[in-house]
Length: 468
Ligand SMILES: [Zn+2]
Image (cartoon, rainbow, N blue to C red; front, side, top):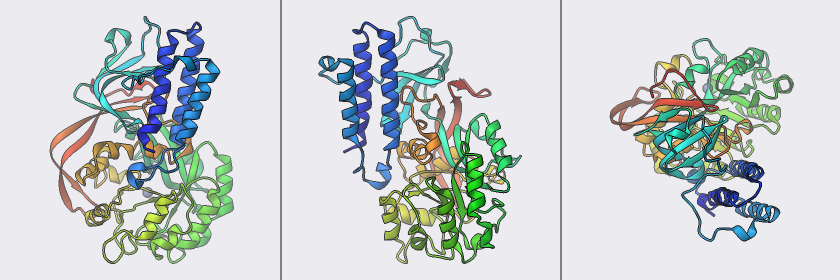
């Protein structure tokens, strides 16, 4: 089954809702039901979202469940006889609007690119009540309280950066909002002893911040697991219990200079502390070979810095991707970029892995205050590196929207422009020219495309200080 089949289920429901709403007596009630069904469907879509592009496998998609839901819905509403015989596939409207109604904001004239629904075409995006209302080929400006001119621009879901460090004064979460990052995960800056301050940062942020708690009580110090007893499972669990809303997973850094020879024990403890939450593993230059580490992971766990240079990279001696890495992906382990500054990505490793078909599931920046100025800069720049490396635009955007959302339960329902979803939107110039990008050893390469953020909408509100 293809992703398209799944999403057709969603848009059919939307179209049906739109087309039958006009016939139904209680239009308001029906519209509410439609919105609710659409939301549930979108949620289910996200819940079952897999990395079809990266894995080439969508075998476990529950299309039947989707269709059953639709049928149940039709039966329940007595609308079965009204099923349209032709599919209005261009319509994505879910909530029909009263003719004279006003939208809070309409983003007009852009190329709307929403990989969560394989949607890529010129369209207008209407926002109301902080949520995506409808996406149509043309929405009258007169129907909008505010219009954002996106002609010549790319319009995507707000970006999700799965790996940042925003606990320090030199990089508050708000600084990433102008880049289009509406949601992010701090990857291990804080541990059980230091978590409260980071939670306060997350609470105060305008954009959404969740935290992967460092299994080491101290958080990142450089050598935080040289004494393995710093990985305190009980302390981590107590911290999670205290901040359930904010801690979305556990982070463990495994490079030999951080965790010495006890990397496998560190993973075991991280897994134990995490319980049903995901573990994010920082790999690269580990004491143990990657396959030994991967053996300890659960589906949903995330390996970051996948293109780290040796020792113990994802490649074998012939520069092919290790079979154990592919096997881990097949059983649901996710592979993330984590650009960072040192030891995490070099062009030859990416070249070899991608030549062997191994592209990332998610693209994250691993940005820090210093990384803002060198090698990383911002998430759109890191995405642009992957455009240079040969990743198609829609797949690169998927890596920072729906794929990233699927990694964190608190981000369920984000990373999409599905009607009813929170209205987080990023607008980009896709500039053409010669753009220089560097890897972690400052090797230079020139790309022809660069994404530059020109406008951001968070929860339906325009982020001030940007053009148009
Ligand atoms: Zn990091």
